[in-house]
Image (cartoon, rainbow, N blue to C red; front, side, top):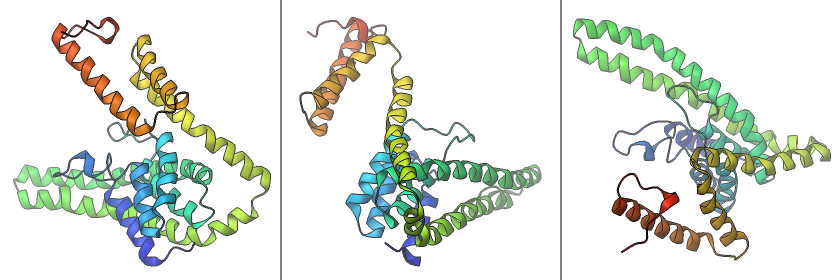
Length: 264
């Protein structure tokens, strides 16, 4: 699959705005919404004309970067660039989710370095904004403190994204064809392991008590052993969460999930 200039521009546009925080939509409209790999894969698939494949690749990437967060201005990996660019390059090549997982690692690291450079460049505008603030020049404060940095920040991000998506897609199939079988197999194995790593990192953050493992095991057994669908299991989990929340509210704020009292 070859990616046209228009398609590359659209992917670049979404990849750029997905890294922003929208005042009206909050985090859901930007980094924590459009910027998630599952949404990024779906949008990329829609642009490239294969939504199903885009969603499958995005879901695989989302499992890896599920627990990835940017704390302050420190970003370990750029999940947004990894989601959009890796999905696009994979769909332009073999449509292999394992290949997308392997590509997402260097792309995410490159995005994190690019994010650091963006902040470093915009620091100069912040100092200029302080000067205008001391003089009480509000309009110039908005221009130098918000307007110009927003343009510069997005341009620095958009140009590499477009170049990688457009020119990388032209050679992705050729590069994959030149890769030996052992390297393809190795990338497939590593790519298959990455979702387990992402899930482990997420569980490490979520599970605060040993008893919390019971909820995870119940969900695992219900899905893998008893064959309950993901939608049905999600509804049951919501109901269980509501019951626990109501029980804790009934017994007082000190009540925990380890000593649930019977409902009245």
